[in-house]
Image (cartoon, rainbow, N blue to C red; front, side, top):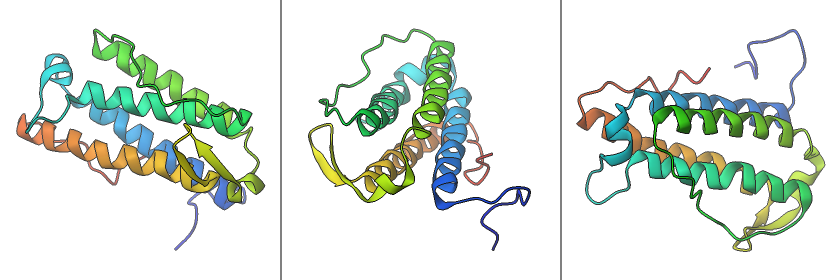
Length: 163
């Protein structure tokens, strides 16, 4: 199996991790966009949060977490308290965060991946494992979005289409 379908330039694990994360972000964006506006903010099952609230968690982890890894400054975790009123506002914030992730990523040298860092003052692990947590958390909660969409009678985007 090839590490990349683009054979024009060599890739590294460092590049592949970012590519994987951005692919997951692209898919999560499609899940957000699949929701009817009202249901994005209000629909839930079994006491779980509406998907808009889950997206706020993603926004509170990815960029703030990377900023900590770049600067070395440990900050407390703070849920994203922006009061989004529309799906377009959420998608705009999502797109801004994705661009910030691209920019911040370039500031973390791959050799730092094995360093230990106490992210949000709560999660002492290697830089690599903290980044993997960002990705895993998004995948896990995106699954809730899939359940919500199916319960609403909406076919979610195929999970394997991350590009």
